[in-house]
Length: 289
Image (cartoon, rainbow, N blue to C red; front, side, top):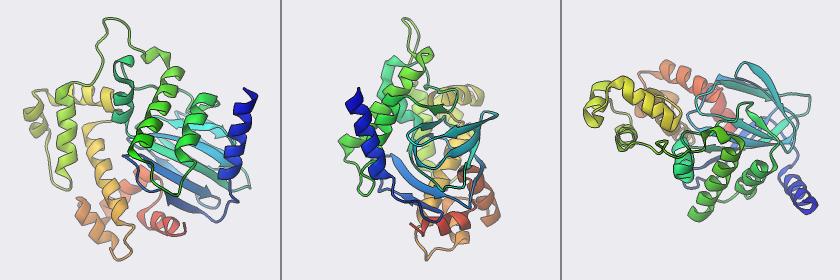
């Protein structure tokens, strides 16, 4: 036990380089996992929501955020656990710059990792945890930030985090005779939304493809993936736009149109709601890394 704590402390010390000016830095893509390192001092995240789990570890300073109508704080070594589609913000809680690393994990990956062991997505009610098992799983995923994880490493990271979440929410553990898993028709709806890209799709299209009414599909979809079909499609478009923003040659208006938004103003509103910054500010902070 003491050796484990010493190892975790050494890992935190290696990760915690001196905070610098506000910046956002993404690690190389790794099997669907998004890994972010952020330093916040002068800037703050406005209220926003993701359709993924956002699970991160505080490295320096204090991470202060509003989540589920309460003010939360995460100290170095503690874990922030934000459930899909839950509104939150974020800022440095003291005069010391906030430094943290975050994992963004798609809810379907968590469902796949847990299989029949969970009836629904695990939920950490406080949005904050001191659980050492979860902290160890997150640290393992974000420690080597400069390279992509191999496919096997990414799978292991998702499984370790998912099992730690399940241990923190035993209410979702499957009971005998309780249906679990994602219905095939709901997976088909998600596949259609992945395929549509910047094109259009209607509720009628999804009803026809799945045989479910739009409201039945919305209920099943939220239970399986933590968000609605509409927000799922919106987030895929925003993620595509964020990737294009890494190309300095592309203007924001061009990015908005390519990603499927009506105009730049619509794109800006939706981007700020999803990521807490305007596209212009996000681009500025991301290029500082």
